[in-house]
Image (tube, rainbow, N blue to C red; front, top):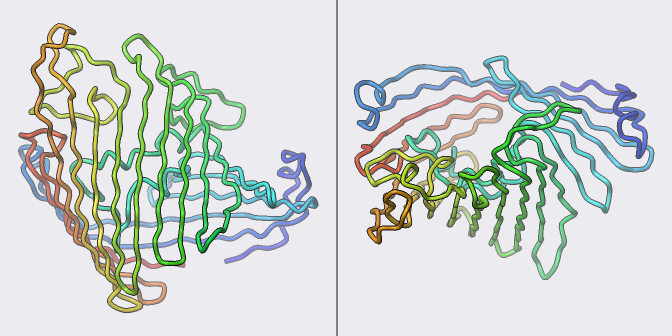
Length: 364
């Protein structure tokens, strides 16, 4: 559905670099049905057992137009089936100067580096514990600004740079003129580069850093991922390495042993993840994939009364596996996966979980 020739007078007033005389506005969306089952022993009782039907609907509005200086501006807003805002963003493309973008819940630059998608989703979709590599870019979904320069072509390769900055890396959604007073994080920066070669090889590497405030959080937070993908005919193979140090200071009150549940935000150790994905396009409509990831929590050392004892705490590895398929028929698609997770919560006694999902999607 397109609605054309709508003047953007207010937008032209805000963007003093030029004036927009008209824009093209479009409405798109999707509807779907999903059936899911979950089993396991990680939550105790009935926490990991259940089944049910659900809907997965979304509605998106977007507008774009060209200003009289040749620059273009676009805005997008998306809603979920819960009648809540999913994301909103504004992009200003300045010709050969590149594009700046900001918004709320718009994924930021990390979406290009935080995981390798299979036929349906990433390996940890539906998992009992989210893969730590997926947190890359989490400081930049809200309250940040992203810059993407034009891609550079050289020797059969396209090189794309992604940069982002947040005055405070708290990932807080802000309206115009509102400031973030949350004290946990100071400024945060992100840098990533993607190289795509004509041979079918794609390589990407990115990192984010954030200052932490307060006497209990003396170290800066850092996370980095790199990946490589190679496509040859109907087969593609992907590999990713992730590293995360949340900057939480070691102490006798924060140390988490092998049999304790950990969360990425609160843990005082280091997370190392490794992921493999192989996908096969059976034909133009059907694709299948298999993925495996190992995500290890390393506590680094044992602590007693805030002092290093010399004894170490055993590493704990969360194991993810996912088998997926996707079949498309024009605007209709049928997708399914089976996902399993062991040592849920980075806990050697955390048990396992399994989720199965099949979804029918309808795009319009």
